[in-house]
Every structure is written in structure tokens, then in C-alpha cells.
Image (tube, rainbow, N blue to C red; front, side, top):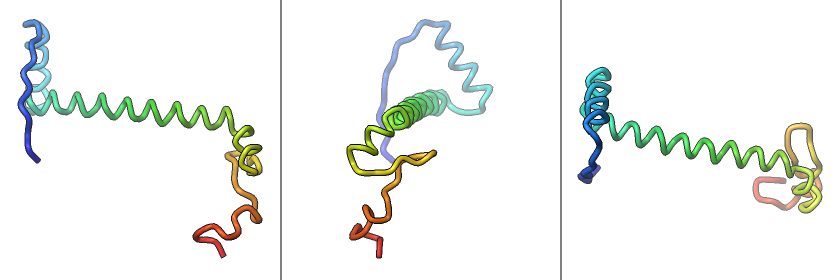
Length: 90
């Protein structure tokens, strides 16, 4: 994969802390920063998934009523007759 160069400015204490953490992990400074960004992006994605899940749980009955689904203890699922004619059903 092609790499893009970024230039950032941080105070000396932050730079030293980054150098020490990279050294402790046995990775280059570039790899350490890359791992931090990837971790941060993953946490944001996970936060979104959790928020979406909470939203769906909170409004489960509204969706069930609107789309003709029957609420289940775990989630709303289509009734047998609602699924007839859908791809993957017989």
C-alpha cells in the first residue's frame, strides 16, 4: 500500500512520550502513530454500532408496527406470512 507523508508539530514533551512509547512497543514512530489512529478510528466505529443498536432497541416496537413485524423478546422478526416471496424463502 502506498504511504503518505504527514508532518505534525507537537510540543517536546509529547514528542518524547511518543518516542518512548514506540520504543517500549518495539515499533517505529511511524507505526506507533499509525496504530493510534487506527485504534481511534475503530473506537469511533464501535461507538456508532453501539449507539445504533441502542436506538433500534429503544424503537423496536415502532419499527415492528410500521413494517408489520412482530416484536420478539430479542428483536423484531417478520412473521412467516410476511416472509413469503422474499429472496431465500420457499
